[in-house]
Every structure is written in C-alpha cells, then in structure tokens.
Length: 602
Image 1: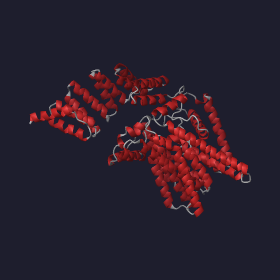
Image 2 (image 1 turned 90 degrees about the vertical axis):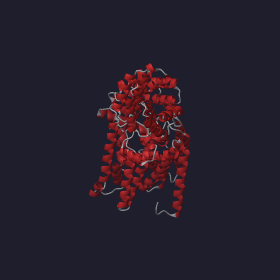
Image 3 (image 1 turned 45 degrees about the vertical axis):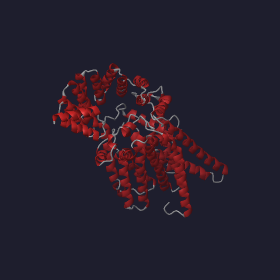
Image 4 (image 1 turned 90 degrees about the horizontal axis):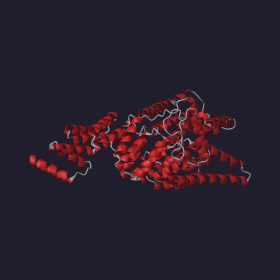
C-alpha cells in the first residue's frame, strides 16, 4: 500500500471510507444506549479507582487486580472518560465504537499484508466490522478491554509482518513487541500472539532456524508473566470454576464451544449475552457434546486435506483456534462456557476463509457474467443480513430491562439463573421491589445454592422493612459462601435496626475479618457502638474506616458527631469541616449546636 499508485490510493481511500461509514451506521443505535446492570456498576459506576486521574489511582491500576482481572490500560480509559464527562454513557459508547472502527481498518491492513489481495482484505474487514457476534464487545461498556486489546494485538501482528517483509529490520520487531505489551496490559487473552507469530512464519514460508526461536523469547517471557498474573488474579478472587474437573469433560466442552462459535459465525441467530449451561457429570452422555466432538474431528481432517492445495484454510482455521483457545475452558477462568465476546479477534480467521472463498468464486466466474453476478449478490446479501442483525442487536443493549428480557425470552426454561438475578438488580434500582424479589426467587429456584441471589433478595426485603425475611436470606447467603463479607455487613445492619446490637457487632466484625479494608462495615460498627453509648469504640471504628478510605465523608461526619457526644468539640469541629470539604452536607442544627458548645467551652 505504501508504494501504491495514485489510482490505487484513491481506491484505498474509498474503501476505507466505505468501511467506516457502513460500520458506524450499523452500530450507531448503541450511541443512544445507557449503562446496564451487568458489570457496568463494578467497572464504571461504582469503581472508586476511576474517580480521579491521579498518580495514586494510575499507580493502583498498574499494581493491583480489579474484579479478578489485570487490565490497567482499560481502567485508564475509564479514568480519562470520568475526568471529562463523569458518567455520560454517550462518551463511553463513542470510545468503544471508535476503537472498533480502528480495529476494522487494522484488519483491512493486516489481511492485505498477509494475502496481498485488496478484495480479500476488504471482505474480511467488512465482515469483521458488521458481524452481530461483535455487538457484545463493542456495545457493552464493561467489555472495553476487548476492543482495546484487539487494537494493540492487531497492531503487533502488523508490526511483525513489516518485520518479515523488510528483511528483519529490528525497528519493526521492537514495535511489534511493544504493542504486544500494551495488548497484555489491556486484556490477558492476547497471550496467544506468540503462537500467531509462529503461524505467520509458517504461512509466509519463512525458513526455520535458530533466529526464529530466539526472537520469540521476549514474547514468550511476556506471555508467561501475564498468563501467571491472570491465573493468580482469578485464584485470588476465587473466580476459577471447579465444575468440570475431568479431561474428558474439558475436551467435550471445548468441542462444543468451537462448533457453537462456528455455527453462530455463519448463522448468528438467538444471540444472547448469556447462554444456558447445566453442570453434568459425564459430558459425553449428552449427544450434543459427542456430535460436536465428531464434527470438530471431521473439520480438522478437512482442513488438513485442504493443505495439499493451499495454506489459506489452514491459516484461517489455525488463527481462529489459537486466538480462541484461552476461553475453551481447559483452564476454567469464567462462569461463561460460551460468550459472543470471545469471538472478537478469533472470528478474523473464519472471515479470512470466507473472503478467500468469495475471491475464488469471483475468479472462477471471470468468463461468466451470470456466476459473477450471483457471487457479488450473495456477498452483498450476507453483509446486509449481518448489518441488519447487528443494528437490531445494538438496540437489545439499550438498557438493563431490554438486555435481560431478551435473555429470559429466549432461554426462560433453561439453566440461566444469572439473567433473573441481573433483571432483579435492574428492577431494584428502579424501586420496583416486588418484581425484583420475584426475579431473585426465580433465580434461586433454578440454582438452589445461589448466594448472590439470596443476598440481593435479602436487601430487597430489607428495603421493604421485612427484616425477618431479610435476615433469613442473609444467613442463607453466608451459609453458602462463608466469606461473603457484604452479606455479613448487611446482616449486621438488619440486626442493628432491630436493636440487637450484640449480633450486629458480631457480624460487622466478621465482615471486617473477611475484608480488612471494608470501609462500610467499619462505619456501620461505629454507628452501633454509638447507639450503645460506647463512644471510644465508635471513634476507633470510624478512624479505621478513614484509614481504609481517607475520602470517606460519612466516616468523618460520623466521627465528628461521636466526638461531639464525647464533648471533644475541637476534634468534632475538624472532622465536620473535613466532611464538608469532601462534599458532605452538614446538618445546620448540628453545626449550630457544635458552635454553641465550642463557645461555651471558650
């Protein structure tokens, strides 16, 4: 492309413009969407690490885990958005869509470098841009890591391709390595790049020698480091599933997943943000998994046979399998067995094969206008169909209700309790407590030992004033998950409201023991001590809350009130003004009483 003629440059500009216009038009409905009650609260709305673009927060992003992941660059994008627009969802959606548009152009560039054919590159890029499976990665604000890691992942591949094409000029090698590092900082799934580089060596007929291996060592080291970090993060947050221990079951799940993704890539119907999966003892006792395994073996044999004629199908298939391998559940990182978002980068391999097929059909039809017309019409129809499905799918993500109603309407009778839980959260946030309780109850009926559903239902009952039922649900949640700190804290609040202060403090202590940085539990314990008249213990508890979170306005205010009751008016005055400085509204009558008390002392 660099040495293209003037005519070719105009063609490139026109193609790039066409891709950008089509993809933007297809995804534009998402710009009207808001946040959803599926991790958007954890990653954005209730994420304290993004509320300040400070050195402390930036350092924290790069030196700590967040929601069982290590994704500092992704968190940094949230910090920047919050810094300028707070919680305006339009800007968050614009950022993700902008990254997707960039990725479409990088796919165009990468495939052109691989195939030396502009038609193949265009078809691959446009299919990547408009496919409905990619809606989840682009439209779900919490999945920003997908489009961000893909940006650097594709950039790294392009850098490596220039390294190969430039007679191994090291500046391109280091560019590829640096972009790989940025990709790992966005999402650890990019560890597969190392194998992709070997695949590129194979596809470009590069001679295998010592240098081929040595130059991969830095990529291997980075992959090993970040892969270990990912496993450690998941283990620390107890996020690695244990339901599928046997190798046989893992093979069955992996086979099912690959066939599932291939099916959805070609026939993207009944898409959902969650898909049902029931835990079973022997997966091959269910025909769907056995048939998937046999179908996968048949496909692999077919791909190998195709190698006699061309490497293209082998390359596309291997690219797909390599990049999707981390989510085939051999290491069960997630509760989701399959998910649309997992195909974001992997789908490029399949789209490349489809593009190669259309190029072959176009070349074969060179002498037949009728066949050429059929080929072109089929391609346009496929693109139009995908684009139409994607626009409709974007609207499903408009808000929490549309999202979870979509899941429940499609899979209401199957094993998918998380959909009811999430819709319950949405109803609870809107103040529709009876419907929220109904949804939580349905989730519990599907999954009896669902600690989070019991916890959420307990909180809904608490808001209704039904303390007996709230306590019962909190206790059940703790029985299921002994380390459920939030449930212990809320159980303490419920006992406090019943004036059972001993039980309240016992549960606050338990919450703090589980999570020593649980600011809310320290605050609540301080409130209970205050009600008992134990001011010294109350002040101590509020102080620990402040130590845990120096910007906790409620802790400063509460400690100020406790100091006032203890007649330590100077300390009370300092805390009240600190709370005001942090944005708290101080009760005017209390402020008058404090000023008068200080005047009387003076």
